Length: 214
Ligand SMILES: [Zn+2]
Ligand SMILES: [Zn+2]
Image 1 (cartoon, protein in one colour):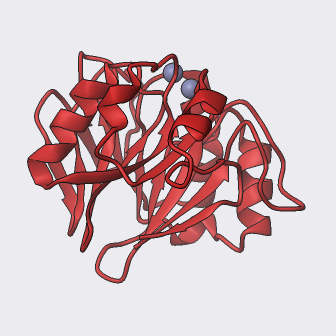
Image 2 (cartoon, protein in one colour):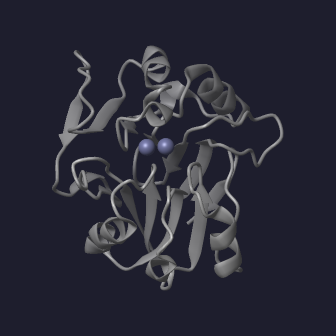
Image 3 (tube, helix red, strand yellow):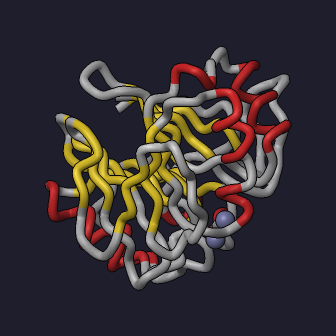
């Protein structure tokens, strides 16, 4: 499985643009291509996709973590380019998409496709993804507005969690990360430096263009 960060507050690859927000592409042999979140604006998202040779038409599923503009801003632009992508939306995201296949995610976990699961909408706010790999579960989170512990607990229903990428917001109860071996603090993470220092060798900098092979 492979996770490519398309949109982030920082840039990892020349030619890409930074912007406040988050978006990532999840690819694997067994599952269709999944876009997780869409950043804050369409032009930046599409520019970065183009630079990364990601064709919006080839996305089969788009998952929105939560209803904040910095995760939903590029959605309408992607849907203009792609008329068939299915949507997995948290129930708190109250926008209708007539003529689309939409799955509204409530508090229960949902299998999206082989080896890809939603944690369910935690605390009525946000869903995260749990990717099942040979090494265990890898979590993809938007802003982590629900407690981090709750996100990891929900993800661990599918196996032992070993890694995480995404926005961690104000998360600072770092003991929660002690069992993890792969940590990418992205986007809105307020304590990036502390996390990179504390988990040296396990934590790495995030940015648009980052590719994580799982
Ligand atoms: Zn955010
Ligand atoms: Zn948010």
